Length: 195
Image (cartoon, rainbow, N blue to C red; front, side, top):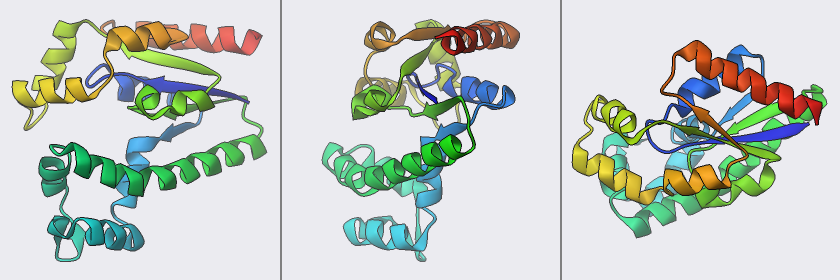
């Protein structure tokens, strides 16, 4: 089974590409979705609540406070990642085992910080989604609650797209029409299946 890593900076179109893989019947492990689900689990709420009591409102993690407090504080972010990443890693292992059992030939690990976390080492190939800076900025600023300052801060926390492109096995452009982006994926899949 070939493990494809999928990554890209904020608003480069990674979610769109991940959905295209699903349309092509390729299983996708969505790390963001796993984290989102974990933050709703009682056991995780308790662990996170002990580390960050200020995040708990009526027994639940307040995601707005989480976004404001933790993501603005590098040490707090590391503390939260130390709680969540090992669990996400276990979920990734379960995903891979399940798909090996199901005799899948290709799976995708959709991980925003793939290179930053070293998870690229678990992949046979890495795809980086890419778009011009102007397109990225326009997409980002169209998001609710996004500001230029917030966008720039997020970009600084991520590896630059120039470096990601250099590290990638494949680069997929997402500033095209959707069917053109899909064609790029089909071509990559054919290339991988030949090897």
